[in-house]
Length: 278
Image (tube, rainbow, N blue to C red; front, side, top):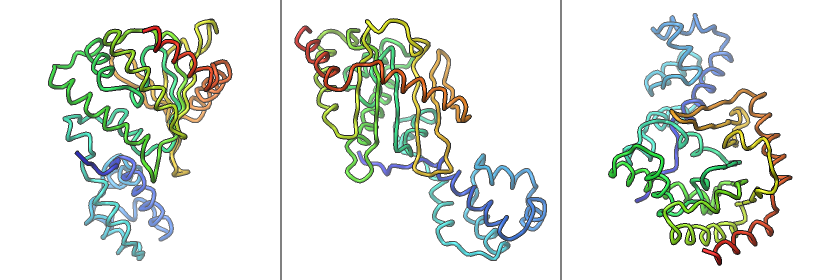
């Protein structure tokens, strides 16, 4: 199954920034523009922040009003209303997929399970079987979607730069059983050969550290106007945080953990020993 890599939410934000600039360049306030566009000021405001989608018709009306023609805006408006690839798997919430899809760099600290992008199908199924409340059919779709995400690691044109620090206990947790974890660890070693993938293991001997407070993921984007995002999962959902101070604190924590973790060669050697012991 082939899907176009896309995130309507991020395209909607890009469109929002561009239509806001057009209005500002035209010297109109939101109140003035909204009145001429036959919409409320609050409605225009939501479109200019990307909270809601802007239709092709509205984009054309804006270009007429602002006396600025940009054919790319029409295409952007169409694509911003398209359904993302994960809808084909029955996944309708924006959640993490929406964040990862447009990211160019992901930094991931995991203290419980291997990062989703590094999981084999059997390991992923073991994770969902163990912690989720999904029905069997929903688990099948969730696992399939997780496997499709891995194409980002092998994308010849736009490979995802992925850096992970993983607690040693994760490698020793027999998710799915001994045979599954052995194949998973062997697959992990292969993924570590990808130039844009970095995996470091935080040894148990490191003792207490900030990462033990919980797993988290940091995502960065090519668009300089998109803030880095801190993603944190919890028992009843997740948090998407883009406040610079919070993101900077998490980034500093991640770098300290990288400095304390085993380097790439040491990590690979540890994983190889565990494969032999399984």
